[in-house]
Amino acid sequence: MAESESDWPLKGHAASLAGLWRAAAAHRLPHALLFQGPSGVGKFRAARALAQGLLCALGPREVGPCGTCGPCKRFQSGGHPDLLVIDPPREIDEQIRIGYIVRREGSGEPENPADEFLALKPMEGGWRIVILRGAERMVEQAQNALLKMLEEPGANVLWILICDRRSLLLATIQSRVVPVRFASLSAEDAMSVLLEQGLAREDALQLSRWSGGSPGTAISIGERGVPLLRAVLVSLLCGEVEPFQAAAALALVEGRFEGKTPAGRERERARTVLDLATALLGDLARLRAGLPAVSLPHGDLALRVEKIAFAAHPALLAAAVDSLRVIRADIELNLDPAQALERASLILAARDPAQLLC
Image (cartoon, rainbow, N blue to C red; front, side, top):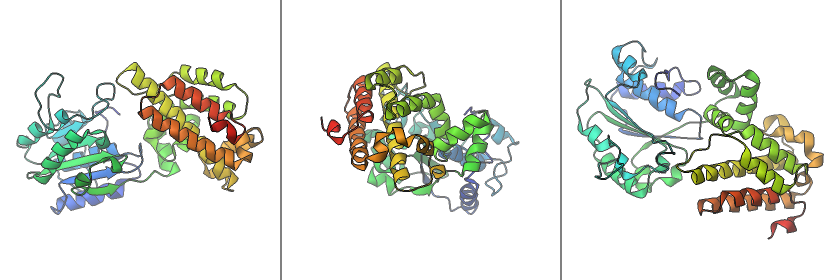
C-alpha cells in the first residue's frame, strides 16, 4: 500500500482501534503492543491507523484521526518526523538485523536505527512511535537489543510489534508487550477491501475465498501466480499431468516471490507450492469428513473427487501431508528448490502409501 493512502477507517478492526485510542486518551496505553494474528488481515494498516490517531492534532479519539490537520497530512505523505517504520524488504534483508534496532558501525547498516530515533525529543510535542513489521524476522541479537529498550521505554514512546508467529519471539519480549489479537475478516469485508484495491469482482471473490478472510494474503497469492500454480497442482492430483512435467511447469509460473537472491526467491516459490499443496489436501480431508464444500477455500475440489486418488484413501492422504511437511522443513535446511518441487510432485502423483516411503 502506498504511504500516501489513508489507513482509516479500517474494515474489521475498528472496535479494537477505538479501544486503544480510548486508552491513550485516558493515559492508559501500554508502551509496547504486539499486534498478532493471521498474515494479511490488516495488522500493519491497523498499526499505521493507530499511530496516525495518536499523532493527529485533535489527539486520540474513538472516531479516529481527522485526516485534514497538518500532522495527518504529513503522516499520509510519509513525512511525519515522529514515526519510524522498520520494515526492510526481503530482497534487501531477509532478517531484521541488530542494526535496525541499535546503532552498529559497519557498512550497509541502516541510517536511522530505533535507538537514535527514540533518543530525539518529539518534533511535534507528542508521541514517538516505532512500528516494527514482521517482528518474528528479528535475529536473536536484535531481539535482545529490543528487550533492553522495552525495559526502559521513555516517556510518550510507543512500540508496535507486528507478528504472524509469536512463538518465534523470545519469551522475555513476549512478557513485556501487551498482545492485541487480530482475526480474519468476514467474507464481506475481505471482498470490499479487495475491490477497493482495484481487483475485478470475479478475481476478488476467488482470491478472498482461497485466503480465508485475509485481504493481504489474497493480494499476495495473486501476485505470486497462485491461480496458475493451483491449476497445475489440481491437474496433478487428477492424474492429468506427469509429476516431472508438473514440476517443470510449477518452476515456470511467473510471480512475485520475495527473497534477497534468485535462490532465495526460488525457495519462496517452493514454500508457496508446498503450502498450497498442503491446503488442497487439507480441504480434501475436510470434504471426506463431511464438511460442506461451500465452507472450504478449495471446496470446488468436490467436483473432481472421482479423479483424485487421495479422496478415496485416507491413509494415502495422511501420508502425503506428512511427506509434504518434511519437504517444507527441508527447504529451511537449504534443500534445492527444484528438488523440492520434484519431490512434492511425486507425492501428489502417488496412488499408494508405499510410494511415499522412499
